[in-house]
Length: 423
Image 1 (cartoon, rainbow, N blue to C red):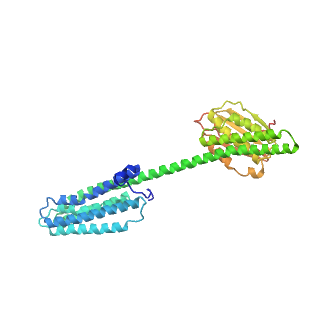
Image 2 (cartoon, rainbow, N blue to C red):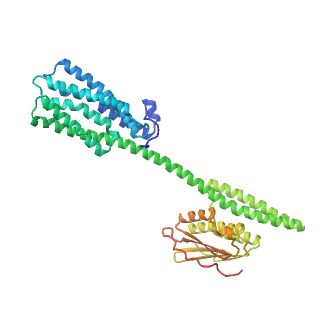
């Protein structure tokens, strides 16, 4: 499970102060699990405290076995947790040592049960189940909750068998079986929940990192789209005016210097707009864009009619439609051979509709959808607007609708052929 990056929890006081919140959370939970496992030898000796039938040598031997088994379980827990978090591929070696240590601990417990004088079956059963319970806890990160509950059945079975080997009757054997089953199930669930929480915290951290990267990518796309809109219109205008100035210069017309001065002014305006885009302060203005569209189209030799430009629209609708005017007029200049262009703005029925039609659509240009139109659709979608295009021979119409109320979506567009009005 690739849930956590290849980093470990904080180590030491200095590491703790520099660690991130997920690292601190993991460190705290890891050492909580390790401390719980470290109680194994103390728990075993505590159960043996009142059992006088065990010799001091036997108690010491069992304590040594418990210490070794406890250390093996802690190492195995660390390895299985690394596998669960996706930082390691396997924990076979650690689990193999844990299996051997668990078998040795159970065999020693059964040997005591068989050779004890006047044994206490309940004590023997509980002592024999300590090592299997700890082993199950160490294995819990690799098991699902259902499989973990099935694995916990091994501990009460061993406890019951040890009680019977120690001379107990079936009624006496049920006591360690029940207590071991409850302890094993509760401890296993607690371990599994702690491990799951560590994974969830790291998963949320990764999700936040992904969201941050997506936000940066989205902002870059916004910048690129804005720069495309700015430079697309400006460079088209510069190309048209430069061509006009060159033609006037060839004819010896005195208006050529004026056209070049306008080109210089356009370049300066574009520079200011680019700076505004980078700073995030620029907002498109509908009236300005309509006036600019009229000038650009006339400079390109296109007769233009603008209707409804005095409509009173909310600021959000004006800005959205201003971007539509900018992109559409740029496309008319760059990708059409138009003689006439009609721009019509209407407001009513809870939405503002902008229609831009021209009579010079090229076959190749109309057959594809450019990045500019895709950018417009994305921009309009953020305010609940829609965009539609219609082509009928050389007639090409772009229609955009945005809601007057930001909380309601724009009505579906019914595209009609370009209006037949003439300037």
